[in-house]
Amino acid sequence: MWVLNKQNQAGDTIVEVLIALSVIGLVLAGAYATSSKSLEIVRQAQERTEASKIVENQLEVIRAVAGVASDPSTNVIWDDSLPFCVQADGTIAQYPSSPTLPTEAQDAILNIEANGGDYPSECVLRNFYHTHVTFDGANRFNVIVRWNRLGGGVDETHMVYGAYRGATL
Image (cartoon, rainbow, N blue to C red; front, side, top):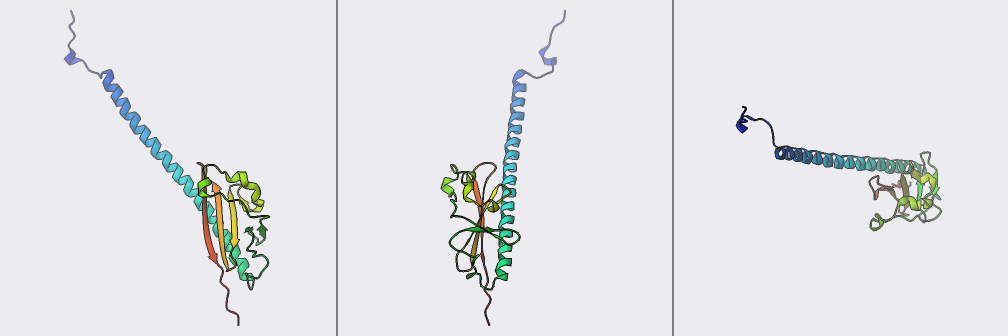
């Protein structure tokens, strides 16, 4: 007759297996959360980098056009009453009226695309970035680029460029 000896039995109990599976589950959940957040941060950085490139391109064209004009403050293209955007060839796309720009308080409820009609089509780049340039009459250009973040919400970046007016002789 066979007598079973518990001391010689090998194997794990169901409790030990469940504990091991719980630990593995926690580790995998932590890894997923970390990688998900990292991807979100990378996506936001890519969006902001692209927006910064657009702002810099707008300022480069403005700088080139302002360098050609002898006095940017008296040139008809520098109208300080309405915003505009510039194309790579130097043409100006004037807004028909002042666009409705969302404020930070409206980010959660206001979608830029809902107000896309306020933006000239030339000022919406890559169907994603809304470009808005203003001239303050004192040789300062303020370029704002706003976009809907892929993860939700509205983001913006802006730069200010002061056009230098050389001394007249």
